[in-house]
Image 1 (cartoon, rainbow, N blue to C red):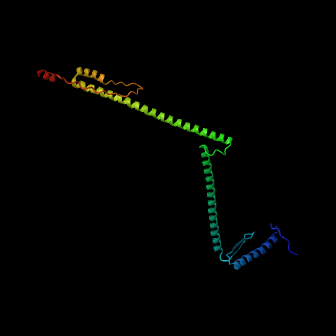
Image 2: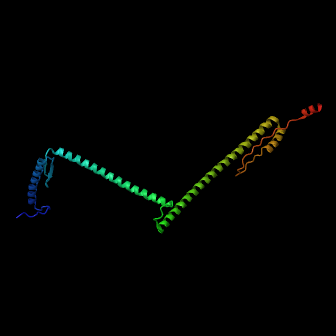
Image 3: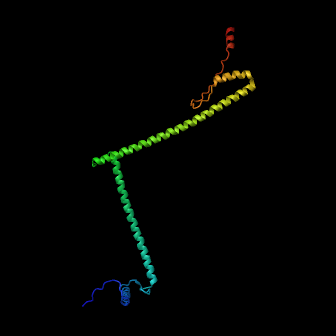
Length: 235
């Protein structure tokens, strides 16, 4: 009669558990040694008992086996990471290609192309998208125009202020000229020059006035022609 199949579970009896551990430990160490000799493989086996006692076997040395194991695990981990990264970027590229295709198709439909496959609700949705886009374009245009108008108004106010300052400077220069003329030619000539200057240079500063300054130059007086007339009579 063959032995019955043993259920693989923890043995509750301490003595039986210790006997089973000793037998199976020796068999495992024997199998590891045979595997190393028969197959010319590098084998390392480490066992800790329930009491913490260490049992080990290495076909070469345990240190070299552990180092080789760590190196192999690192290489496998790196290879797995590379494969995972390549797979990730492949999926990302496929998603971007699909998004690009959808955007191109949507753009063609917005331009009125390739509408033959759309039903009435899809056409209504497309019409709503066009209306929303057109409304956004108009709002952006109105905003740009309003900003330009505001900027032009600011420039106009600055030019008005500059004109006012120029009015003040011109009037100040005219007063200084009158004072100098008074000192040089006397009061009588100053009154005549002042009257002529007021007729020639009519300056006034008005609030909120955008009228530009008009400077007029006095015309030279015509020269006398008495000498040519006398010469003609003498002939």
